[in-house]
Amino acid sequence: MQPTRLSRGAIYSILLLWCIVAAFPLFWMVNTSFKLPGESFGSLTTLFPRDPTLRNYTQVAQLVPLGRNLLNSIIVAGVGTVVTVFLCSLAGYAFAKFEFPGKNALFFLLLATMMVPPEAGVVPLFAIMRALGWINNLLALIVPTAATAIGIFYMRQYISSFPGEVMEQARIDGAGDFRIYWQIVLPVITPALGVWASLAFIARWNDFFWPLLFMRSREMYTLMVAISVLPVSEGLATPWPVIMAGTTIAVVPLIVAYLLLQGLQREGLAIGAVKG
Amino acid sequence: MTSPSLRSRIWKNRQIYLFISPFFILFIIFQLTPMVWSLYLSFHEWSGLGDPKFIGLGNYRFLLRDSVFHSALLNTLFYWVANALLIIPLALALASLLNVRWLRGKRIFRTTVFLPYVTATVAVGLIFGMLFDYNSGLVNDLLTRLGFAAVPWRISTQWSKLPIVFLIVWRVTPWHALILFSGLQAIPPDLYEAATMDGAGALRRFFSITIPSLMPILFFSFITLTIDSFRIFTEPYILTQGGPANSSISVVQYLYINGFSIFKLGLASAVGYALTLILLLVSFGQVMAMRRQSGLTQVG
Image (tube, rainbow over all chains, first blue to last red; front, side, top):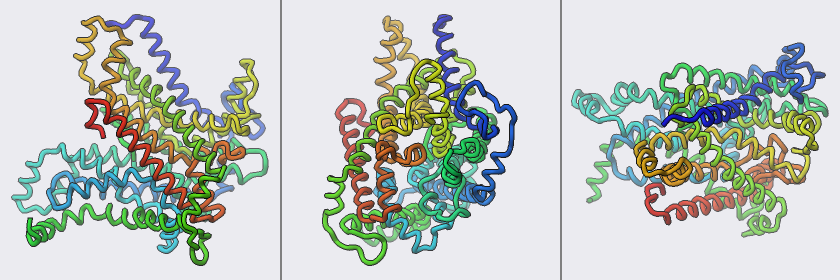
């Protein structure tokens, strides 16, 4: 059935408007970050900065230890993602391809843990971190989410759909279970690894609650905590251009990576089909 | 099954247990232990120094009386209802638009509308703080240009919850739209063809085919939205600090303040348990409601 010209126009207009609403706040953030302090950032009449300046960026670097905070975010998101993708896919492989006593009960337990909000035990968790000496230590952000229920669940679903014959052949040839995982399963599940790695990276990079709790010194802040203190670090009037410079630094790397991934992926990464 | 054979089967699979052990070890240390300890603490008064003092149900009784906790709970319920009413219809509309067969540039549209979800909540909070600023925000600038009065978004007890809802709707709708989009693609096209042949209009097809086929995914979307709504923290923390006069404070924020600002650790633990209980009840209620409808049992 061919659409009428009217419905065609309406649908394209709505989608276009939707894209503008989605992208505008980000555009406004970048655009404000290049404005001079005196310039208006609350009116469409000054759509672009009159006199683009990098002053706000240097000021962010003076207010917070920016390089160190950036490095912390990269370590937490990078190392955390590699570890979680490895451990989740290994456990997912075990649940998908093996029969062992207690398997169903353990898998049910794993799913049940997803219903309990992790914020509920946060007071004792802080005490545990202190006992481990992990306050102001990036391990506090990497280790607890090194293997997550939802990640294992996702990997199990994906690996289940992969036929077992190749594995059987490898086993006859004398390969151990771990070698089969490493040499046969991993190469086949690269799409799932890619999806999960992207989601895990986004979740860790954007995380705020846990670094706010466990990182108590300016040097150990991640980028998200660092930009959250920008509004209070300067006098009474809110220095919006400086804050926007901070958020731009925190947000743009991820958006660029996301756009690159979308461009590279022929089928379009099914990002967001599951949560990190 | 006799026990020696069970033991030998476990021994034979020892490597497999090793593969799945990291999750369970981490779960015991970082989730189970805190939960059990938290239960113990919730019956005590403790500031972190000295020994916890047993006060029975004192903390829970305090929560029943405390007006700040009531605000936190009511605000959180407001966020949940507002999110559900706005996000799910919007996400369904967006997913349906993206699923139109003759649409060109699908990938560009999809990539662009998904941008908000990639943006960190903290950053969005700061950006919306600027846009909804009373004196110098773009939103009030537009409103006054159109002849309306400027709205004290973040500084009045009446309005403070709205920017938070807008923030969440803006950031999370694309995620739900993508989930629903994948569900739409799974509906067999011949269902629609048959209905068209029988003379059903677009609206009729939407309500008698799309919605029923999408029920399991809508349900998943709703459960996720519910859990996320009850865990709201960053949005009010950044945008309004929970104020003014606690008019936008959330339950997790109330927990955070008690645990890490004024060090009422027993009370904070009790809040954690109250939150867990509420979530389990709500999720359970939703599953039961879905079960009652026929043909949808595979979801629960």
